Length: 483
Image 1 (cartoon, one colour):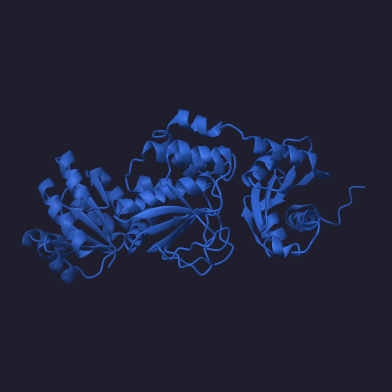
Image 2 (image 1 turned 30 degrees about the horizontal axis):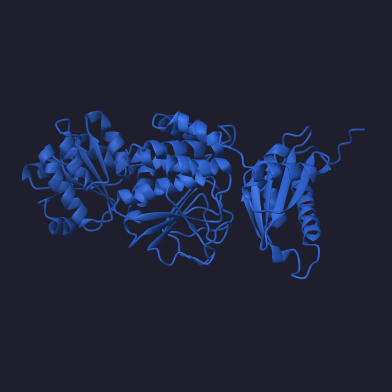
């Protein structure tokens, strides 16, 4: 059974009719007259004391969500407590009438996942929240997945997390804690970009930086945000079991998890997490709203890339709670001398081929400076695509940008380096990581020269392949002759 209703309060008659349109609910009541009346209307009403958890479970069996409809505010606590005790993993929605006080709501909220005030006009909304709409069903399943974790939930961003990943992970942690599950936000790699460090420091986010040898074994469950597969742009071993995935990037291979929210039709993962706050009627704290809004803005390039109406709605909700002055401070942090040196080296070492610029900066310690250098090179006259790369003792890191409408630079990097490392991103910005051993031998006297030749060669080859594919799909007839 999907839905159980305890009681028949304020919006009862309207609610039962709407619920039946989406599958018959079971209604449990103690009053014989009410049971008989509802049965005459075709409602599956059953007689039982709705304050006895064992009796409720015996009569109703298994359910996914419970709607609590107390006749009076005073009944709300008893019914909500019964629902939670009988069905600890179900989504519990409590509907309190206009007479409920703030104290009534606080008490009921200790047992229910969501507490709403009800009128006749809110019946359709209650149906959606109880799981009768796709959003309601998704929210209910996420709550259940978070609640079922036995121990602490590890919420993992992708390596070297960006603002969208950071804010989304913090939000998911708070949603987990809201249902009584301890959670910790973890990441591999570094947070090097000045704006990203400012985001974490100014908003006081508590994140754990894991060493490459550490795994998720200490956690009772694993959640992935802004990526969907362990081992792909993730320090987690590929075989790591995953409980929750929330990501807006289209997966390149099957994804396995107890709960999946993969929606590529929105511009950011922050948008998806903001939707859960809205559906659960959770007012975000200032620090959370500010982070999510910044994550949404950066991943959509200020609402100019892959933006949807859902992104705009999320932004409208978040801006009411965000701190505009803190956003300004995040967006304008001080630039380190090392970053300026990296940009200068990138400009000095650049190789130009038509509208494409590639540059190797050599050994790198501030990997995020590569992205800033790629952005700066894109500002050069007549340049449409940039690739900036550097290396450490173990890994080659690359960052690419493009404003060429014919290209999907994320696809180009996957074509270039996906077989020898990890790569991905968006149509206009992407990154890659390649184990150094895939490119040069240990005894190579000039690793920099070999790395540059291989990386640039593979990149230019992939550019030709993807450009040819795009021309074949969208371009003019190859037999046309312009004369």
